[in-house]
Image 1 (cartoon, helix red, strand yellow):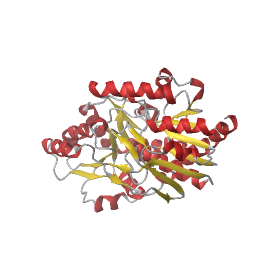
Image 2 (tube, one colour):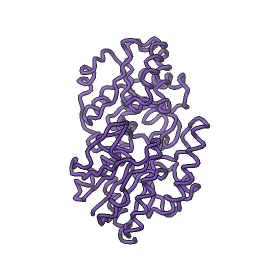
Image 3 (cartoon, helix red, strand yellow):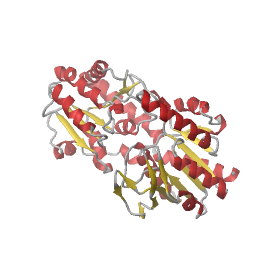
Image 4 (spheres, one colour):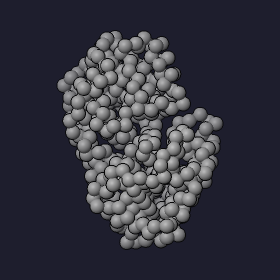
Length: 387
């Protein structure tokens, strides 16, 4: 099949989980013999990329931004014409509340092409201050009316998203829950000790956070939980990996200093190389993601793929990824004491920690991209036949 994937960012601008998802599923579809084109914007934070190139067999088309007001409000120049210029079997777009999805679905209607819309999360469910919630809800409602009713199929990675999408106008019969997607290679062996040496991390145990350095991801609560953890394990190393957003890294450094963290605090920045990122997971004893909201967390599954017990929050789709006390622990959001207690409990019981890690690896197996790609092929074929 000839498949168009449409997402706001792509290589080399891997801003978050959506970009990695599109990249990884595109790689898998190419390996299965499909012709995959990705349409994306050409600029991020003032940095521009070439208009076209091929990476891992994926044909990339980067289009200039005509309007760039915020992450959610971007208008690309020429997207409709570019999608209509070629005859695709499927047009697959990501995020129901962005203008590019409206355009992608319009291109499908104009060319008679079946369309698929993947929804990673429902934006109005994400906790924000009131003055950010109001414009988001207005834009979400406006876009949702134009996307959820038009897509041939709507895909979500967590069952908790189904009811909110129906409330926004998504036809229940078109909504499917699919695998989340984690690279099959994530289950391989990686050099965790080498990662620690390369980054000057000495001592153990190691508690790892991987995600955007953003208050909604909750790294500040891990830092505030550190004094409790250090009382039981004085040589604990706290490692934070991820891109800085809005200079939040400086806030975290200040938090770390205020909580007595010095040589055992490591703020490493983003790690984009897959092998190095998986080595980071391999290096830790506990993975912590004290997030305010997740549709589905890629980093949780990647940590579980490496056999690591995880501690996260009872929010969004996270409870569908792990069961409290089985693969790890679930704690309330913004509760540093509960977070610290859960991490200490895992570190104190090595047998239980190993059992949690093993059960996490088992839970990841159905979530692999090879499984998702096989499911997508069937969905694409069904959409193509019935369109």
